[in-house]
Structure formats: structure tokens, C-alpha cells
Image (cartoon, rainbow, N blue to C red):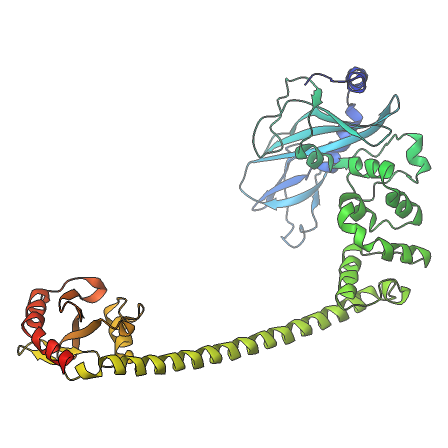
Length: 439
């Protein structure tokens, strides 16, 4: 992307004047960023750095802490594997200055270790994060391919101004070369050479733009400092408690546990403005005490929830029973005069369903909706069950308005081999239904 303003043009011009990444810096990265492997098979070990192979009588327990290559002297991690190639890719950064700008230069380094051969290395500067005096970050980087992976760089592309992308923040959170150069304003704000486990870019930007970072740095609150650097909005809720710690000379040593502890204090409505609570002598003990209280509270809440659910279930069952009883009464009032109707041809026996419970059993057995859709409440429908012995064959609905068969359904609403026989038997006896209606 072409520079759009004077500042971007200035940065592009300065970027081309930066010295190349030095061999000393790259050697440091090779030694500190990579995992150095010794391949072990049976009684032999092979150095992943120089490729030297030697016999070892050491047991597995003896090499758990690693070993030393007798040829190149490298400290190695023993890896029991038949894999012959081991590839690694990391990023490291060089923190420097240039004409009033703070610059973080990000370098990608790759290592390919093949069993029996010396490891080969590759490195390339892929991005530069230029921090302006007012805390704005301008990124100069190589072109990057589309995709989810961070390492899709086009190494032949030029270093140009690039729009912001989360990938630049991700690769910026990496190991930094120990020789650091910063602008005087950072030293004035308390920087003494360490980023305290925070991303160098985020740390330096925060030190310029957020007074909380400067306060924490000068107060020696190094454990909680990275949390404020990376999650300033989330940490704003505990800032008052942090200030109480600073006033009382209390150093937070475990930031994650302390933040969880403050959240628990707030949950139990404790006074988080009181040093008695905010500055515990034994943080772990107080934290664990509140965790136990919270767990007991949750158990009580769960028991109360289950109790309410049981009451609701019982109430639902009671209402369901009342509805069933009311429906039984209504069904008996509407259809009791048909209850003794039975048609039979010696094989099939067709009878009126005589209760809501029978509708339920009919629907459950036949897997259809005669109960679900409340056929027992339809005043103009009369429902029969066709059976052979105790086996249900089909369910028949007859309209009391037209004296016609509305439907006759077998299991899962399918017609059975007795369908026509059932239809004919009902039609043959439909006059009995008409007699009961006029009685």
C-alpha cells in the first residue's frame, strides 16, 4: 500500500535506512527460541543441531532432563521417535529506535533438523511496528497470503505500509533480543529493560497512552502489569483495588488468582475498597476459602432449583390429572350412549373407545395422534378401535354429522390388510350409531 500522508512517507523512508538484522541477533534467536532435539532409537542418540550420533547407555529416566551433545556441546531435549525430520518456526523481535520513532522489528526464523545431518536455518524480517510519539502504531510488512496460518509470507515482496490485521499483534507477542533501545520518554515512564511477559509492542504503546501502566511499573506491580497491558478494558474494574494495594505496599504476586479473588469478593458483596480484604496476607488461603463458599452456595442453589423443579413437576402432574378427570367427564357426557356399541364379523371386533385413558393407550400403541390431537373432545366425532383379540389393528373415526367414515388408520397411519374389511363392517353397522343418536 502506498504511503498516504507525510508521516507514512517518512516511516517508509526511514524503514529503508534500517540496518539489516545481524548474525549475532539471529544466532541468539537460534539458541533461545528453538527446541533443540536429540533423537533416540534404542541405544543411540543423534544431535538435531550438528547431526552427530553416539551410543548412550543411559536409561529413559536418566535422560528425562535432557543430555549434552559430545560433539557440539548443545544442551538437548531427548525425543523418543522414529521421525527423521523435525521442523520449527518461530518469531523474535528486535526493539530499537529510529529518528524519534520506537520500532519493533519482527523476524521469522525456521529450522529444519534432519536426523544424521546438521540443522539448516532460514530467517527473514517480515514486519516492523513503528510506534509514534502519540502512541499510534503503523505497520510496515511484507505481503501475506490469504489463509488462517500466520506464516504465509511472500518473502519476495517489498516491505510496505499495511492496513491493520490481528496477525501483526499475534506475531508481535514473541521473544525479544535482549539488547533493547528505547526512546527517553519510556525511561522517564519507568522502563528499565524488561517487558514483564507482555508483548513488547503492546507494552510500549500502553506505556505511552495509559497512565495505569506507568503507575504499575513504577510501583513494582510486575505480575499484574501484563494483564493491564493486554486487557485494559477488562482490568478497569479492579483498578481501585490495585491502587489500595499500591498505597499499602502490597505486591500482587499471582495476578490471575488475585483477580479471581477480587471477583469473588464482589460476588459476596465484600468491601473491595478495604485493605483488609484486598491485601490478604495469604492470598491462596483466602482465595480457596471464598471458592469453597461459592461452591457451597452453588450446591444450595442447585438443590433449591431441583426442589422448585420437583414442585413444578408435581404441580404439572396435578393439573394434568385434573385435566384428565375433566376430559373424562366431558367425554362421558358426550359419548356414553355409544359405549356399548360393538361390531363383529367373527374375526374383527370393533368397539367405541370408552375413556380418555383408552385414547392414550390407542395412540401410544398405534403411534398416531388420536390422543395427542384431543379426538376425545370433538363433539361430532366417534372413535372406534378395530381389534383381533387383544391386538389393535386400526383406529376408525366416524362423523356424527354425516355418518361417514372420516378415516381408518393402522399403526403409524398405514393401512392394514384388514382395511377394506374394517370399512365394510363399520358401514354395514352404521345404522346402530344412528339409532343411539336418536335415542
